[in-house]
Amino acid sequence: MASIVQRETSFCVRWQAGRAGRRQCCTFRGPSADTALAAKQLAESRRHRITSSEVYATLDPKHVTPPPVSGSQNLRDWVERWLTVKIDVAASTHAEYARLLRHHVISDLGDLHVDQISRFDHLDPWKAGLSRKLSAATVHKHWAVLSMVMRDAVPYLRPDNPLERPQGHRGNGLPRLTPYQACFLTTEEAQILLTACPDQVHGLIQAALGTGMRLGELLGLRVGAVRHSGKATTVHVEQTLLNNGRFDVPKTAASRRSITLTSSLTELFSRLIHRRRPSELVFPAPNHGPWNANNLRSRFWYPAITAAQTCPDHPAPLQSGSRKAVASSCDCATYLYQRPRFHDLRHSHVAFLIDAGWDFYAIQKRLGHASIKTTFDIYGHLLPYGDEQHLADLELRLPTAAEPPRTQLVVRS
Image (cartoon, rainbow, N blue to C red; front, side, top):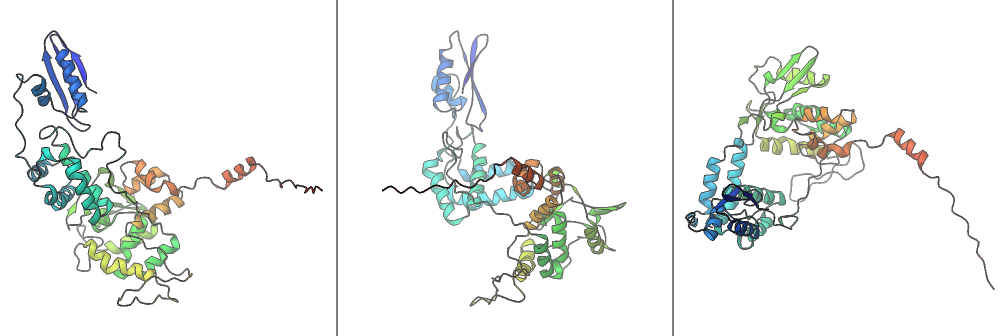
């Protein structure tokens, strides 16, 4: 809502151009507040999506020269300028923004002028087209990044951000997201998976189950980051391997953390780093260089999952025209029923921690979450709400189940 502040000989009208826009201010001199009141009503009639220059041009043209029409600025040029000055994000995030904007935004909307883009004529058809060829999560990413681009164009090139949620609406009409159902392996299932793993990734998967580290953190781990101090051995997460093959610092300050190892993991890491230089990778690829994550999954992880899903006594037949075996369908307990992602090893590690009685603050620090809310949102449902003693106390307070009254059948003549 716009406001009027009276000064000595003038009236100042203030409002915000859109929810994420800059604050606007117009000053009108004179003994009367009529012009200021008219400016306030104008701003509110436009739902505050109007700049101070436009208000001056409408109510007091002599005060300022109307701004030039921004028709020469198309979205392609504005996106490239926005990418140039966007320096407050990590290099990997900036590269992701550039990829999204240049692939599906500039190619579809780049020739449109920034001030002419509308939701009805351009954004809704563009959103519907993306939904037909991309996943719902990817459509949400494109919408969020373009919204940042258009937000920074307010109020220089247009008075509002057309990607903001319309007033009175609960959403932006984006496709509904289906959250991924995390897979939590039991100790027996984790053992089956480890048994099926080839030697090249056996230690990597064992470390993921025992530390909860992300794949990039494990692949970027150096020998010098594994340190012995007294009876404890800790792993210091100091860098991560990105998808483009570059090493970088962890994305957040909370991700830079120390993880204490169990005795079995201490033995594992001791074997892995024995007589190796501190600068070497703890988990190198077979060529002794850094892994390519996609190559690791396709060559070792997926075959290991397939092997773990195959019952030794009842292997499933091969699919016709394919060399890939399908999962067994028997009821034996000797194979894996679930098909986890590599990141599910991190989820399974948290399930082990909760089952071992760890408190959530310690779990948050071990995982590197910036907020404990994130930890609760993802893993809160694993908490054992209501133990045996509480259930026994509840049983004492419940009414006893009485036998239903017997009804006597009366036969009338």
